[in-house]
Image (tube, rainbow, N blue to C red; front, side, top):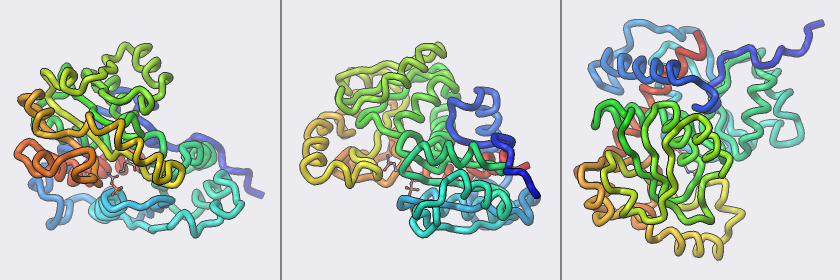
Length: 319
Ligand code: CP
Ligand code: NVA
């Protein structure tokens, strides 16, 4: 009889704080090389080498997605592999089977799993019991794949990110948490401007301090923007909060966040900064049309770079 799968034997991509700066830098450099090798084009010519030929990646989603789903699917195919899309709501783990048992079963069928989940704990349980790599495709707490694309995009427009300043203006949410991880691992200053009731988890800020990172909470977004090389924001209500906040909670969230909206005034205060957003954007809420469509917006480069950055992650995890 086979023993249960041994835990934590695979190379997981769970969060940036779980990996060291050297590994993360290599992944960014690999992603840049892969993009260059295609002449900078996301589509068209096949890669010369197919390092994941014959490999299968399961993509499990408990929440909606456009970019994550498509970029993983296209990326895996460009590397010679295949993907299988699974709606988490249709799987048995949504109906009583444990996440751990699901991991043990998936480990027998496929070569890696990407999970987008409502509960960060599910990601950890999946990784704990899985003998194949598990990749975080967004949880209620973090979104590390987004940050790999964002660091790559920043550097394409503004050069090495180490020593630069990035301003987050908006809710201290899952994407903000991964920006905090990134600030520490890639050694840049992050100023987080957000209302105190939606601030990042104090444990995260304590971790950043302990690691010698430069992460600062700033109340006034205009003050925070001075000298910044990038201004970043994200949706005011994240997917995992929509049901729990309801109409009243959403209204009050919008009221407290309105002064953190990224508009032309904020971008003027940041002078030379690019504008970044993981998308989907709620135009007119966290960002104005003028900024989204303006000359300093790099949001669609970020979306494209999801493809290149995740290809580097897939090759690292699966070979
Ligand atoms: N940025 C991002 O993860 O987008 P999707 O929700 O469309 O995957
Ligand atoms: N913070 C957003 C990101 C979406 C990609 C959310 O979790 O809904």
